[in-house]
Amino acid sequence: MTSVRGCLMAASVDQAELQAMIEDFEASQLSNEREAALQAEADGVASKLQCPICNQCVVLQNRHVIFSSCGRLRVPLQHEQLSVQDLSRGLTDATQEHKASGCRAVPEFCQEERFGIPALYMKCHICQVVRLIL
Image (cartoon, rainbow, N blue to C red; front, side, top):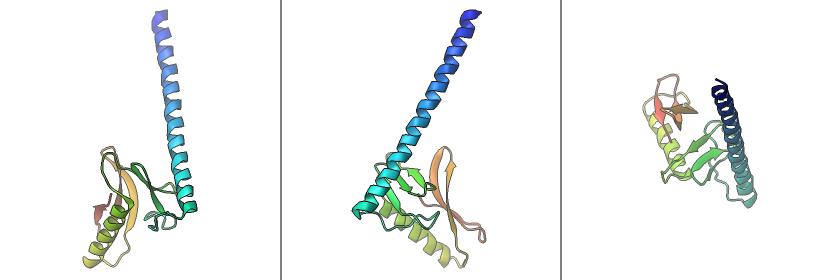
């Protein structure tokens, strides 16, 4: 009985250590992205694409992640060869199609996780359109 309790206690400690390691890694990734954003802005090579969610910060790409320095947009690209320019084209196409549909409302953009995959969506609360952007 004592060995079972010992194993359970060791497993919970291992889980706590694992959770701490995951949190450290995620904090490190966010820090790296912020550093990349600051460096890109300092170097003058930052994308001119504004974050579609906050409409203030710029959108950047760091390896396989497209993100905004505001922290509200962060889309991992997995194995896809997409870029900030692809995001810009997708935003332009989606907003033009929405306007061409006759709806005059300004759509909103949001990041949502569906089926375990974070993605950027365009939504209009008037015509009820929902479109995957990236």
